[in-house]
Image (cartoon, rainbow over all chains, first blue to last red; front, top):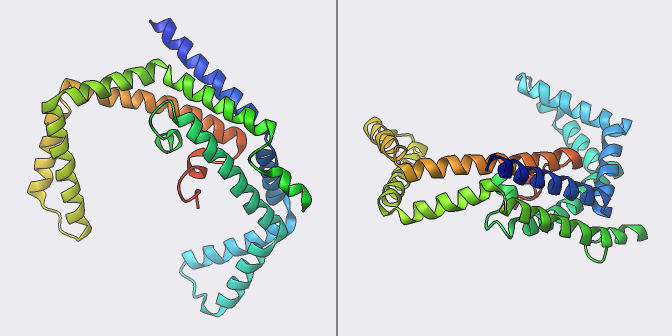
Amino acid sequence: MENNHADNLATVQKRTDEFIEALLATPAIRRFREAARQFETDPEVQSLLETLQRFQQAQQAGLDLSNSLQDIRDLQLQIRNHPVVQEFLSARDEAGALLQETNVAISQPLGLDFAQTAA
Amino acid sequence: MEASKEHGLTGSPEVAAAMEAARALGRALGESAQFKRFEAAHDALQADTEARQKLNEFLSHRQELSMESMFGSTDQAALEKLEQEWQSLSAMPSIISYLHAQEDLLAVLREAAARISQQIGLDYGAACSPSGGR
């Protein structure tokens, strides 16, 4: 019984790893990983994010930012319109759509939503 | 920009392979001892009329109370009554088995999802939520 139990779990782990491997080979996940790498290493994007973070920290510390509101809006717009950020967001959407499809396939034999239940 | 069309979800053999691997994972989870025990505990709870009735009462009282507390008033006596209801519920064998089975199944599902999230660098649960994790 205990052996069976362990076998079952080993199979689940094996299938999980095979699924991960298959996901990593898809164009959507490859694109996402590359976009995430660019996003995390692009000096311009990181510098914009750090500046925004400093504003957020100042706000949390209770500083009056009413004179900086336009600067903050410009900064947010600059981040949102940055090609590296745009590619990251678009790649994340595409990866998310693929993951949702795979979740339907995983969930089907279980009669429950795998991703929601495990979240 | 032409290259971005290749990222489409359909028509790629890699996507077909990922979907097949997803189905295989679903089957493996469905065949696990944890899932089978959960299903059995679920059926046993469904068949236990008394436990089900008590559970439904508890859930509806809990909902009433959480509605009330949203509007600022928490009735201490009602809270104690709810606690008592839970105590008596959680002593019922079919409820105990169900909760344990659920906990064990959740651990298996969470471990698999965490592994996936970690390896692909994207939170699987959040990415699959209706809002897409945003």
